[in-house]
Image (tube, rainbow, N blue to C red; front, side, top):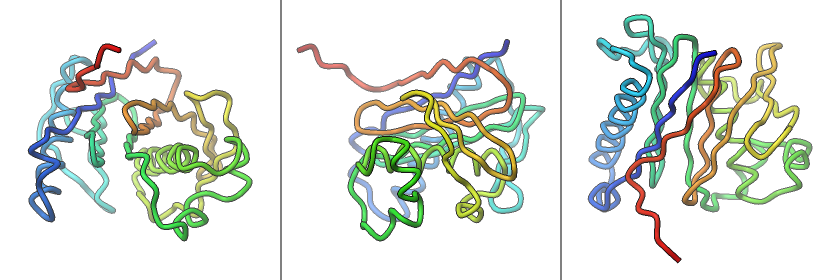
Length: 196
């Protein structure tokens, strides 16, 4: 059985102080750094990181890859098969966004509406859509169908049930969708834990 090593890399205070295009460029650079850490853990050697249609990452030297970034973290993962990763900060958004991402039925699978539940669904769907290489364009064709545990959701897309692994840490939710039954070893880096 193979092991995936998704990496969540905490943003620096300097990144948080940036605005606009400078912030986006730094977050993108940081996400690729998280990807390189994942590649190191997996023993992967990557070549050029190119994207194709719908901005979907193209395999590099036989390795599939995915990146994401949010307010406080960047994420990256490599895999021998298609993979998608997403990370989001759990912060309230405009209420109109909720029904565009999650139906009442989907939210009920997670015990009803809470921003935490909303972002668990959002990141799970984003991870599946990234794995499929279509991105947000097919959000309406993606449905949460089961929630077996806090760490696992089942999302239906293109007549297939995708297992999505979830990690919630430091005010963020991260999700990874990958084919097969690979083990997932989350790596959270750059966060200082405070003793209580």
